[in-house]
Image (cartoon, rainbow, N blue to C red):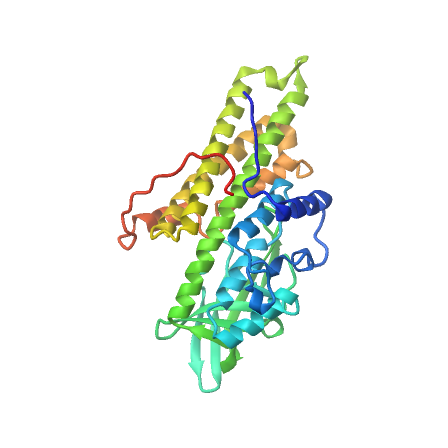
Length: 370
């Protein structure tokens, strides 16, 4: 069986991200490469000093990093933050987006990697001279240093608000740890943290709209990351079976292993078609976009886990060594199921009465999105 893995998002950004990832694979992250390479300016409008790019551009970066197993918070830093900041008033949004683009402000979202930006864990109580923030957020990405945190919160009256809080005011996290895919995670506990009135960037409908856009972008880019990682995993597994020898012959000569790799490749092609369909739905601003993304999340999570488990088994003892790219990629795929809501959460929301029952027909295309 012949296999091919054409790029989903070809272009200069993909090439640049791939070169960086290839040079820094399996290395500890030094400095702040996302901002040093200018990627934070991708979604920032040109009038605010940014590039004025699209999610396709960010997807190129995500694909390039995933191909070589490098884990950077591109989705959180380059997509979620700019989209949430757009909820603020025009002048405020322009000022902070400009700071993000030039790198003078290092803003990170205080949201759990396992939850969507629409599911705040912080509550805010309005005081005479500001607000008091309370709550526990588990699994915040701290891979890169931050000077400010964007904190989505729910007010006492049930309305939604967005706060921008200085990192020094937030303080140190309650716990730090390494996540399965190699990120630096942290848990924050806020107990009646006092913030000034000006820390509230926006509230109400503007915040809800920004959260929805950030959630859609996060789900879409995570799906692109999953497909890029799947391509790498299948490619690495095929190479391993051709090179590894047992009983005097290559592992690739065993029919049962060939069939298993074929199953992985079919799952990869199906996942690629789903992502292409999702990007087309996003471009067309489809009314059922969120439902499409939820369905894709459920399907991709199942395919990613099945392929990861198969690859680990076919690599044998090497499959549990993090020095092997296939192992790191398998960890990335298993962890991707839990990013921005796991498949059970999205399946439950698909079945909830509030979700319209719209029929979605997924594409089987396997070419480039562009």
